[in-house]
Image (cartoon, rainbow, N blue to C red; front, top):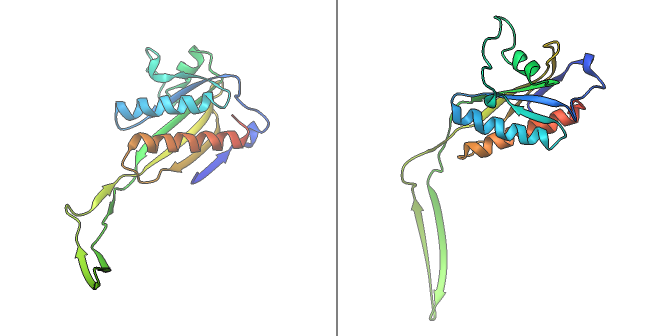
Length: 179
């Protein structure tokens, strides 16, 4: 976790054993669904009963200025909302650069040596890291119980990065005592 905050008004309370609405916001539908599935699994593994926001019909229509998931959470009887927002960080170009090698060998009574240099084809490889801002929201009041920010490593596999973010976040929520 890069940073996290816990609302002192919720000290000693938790959502373990209760129903929670899991919602993810991402730049496209695929990332949203991967995020919701993985976040729901992480929350479930820690004792909460998740409902995926994407599986609910008619989750829109929230009043201006309110959390768009409050009405949906109340409709399904969720005690809280776990909302994660995925953002792509700046792309990172990783250039492996040239490599230099030296070698010594022998055989048949002869000894030889050599040196070489190699250059990668195709130039730099670009990796994308992701960041997630997550909030645990009390569905009865709309108050933020906990919030945190996490960043993933720069892996080529986005699904693995989302898994890293959801696991890190769920562990932090569990560590806060709220999950």
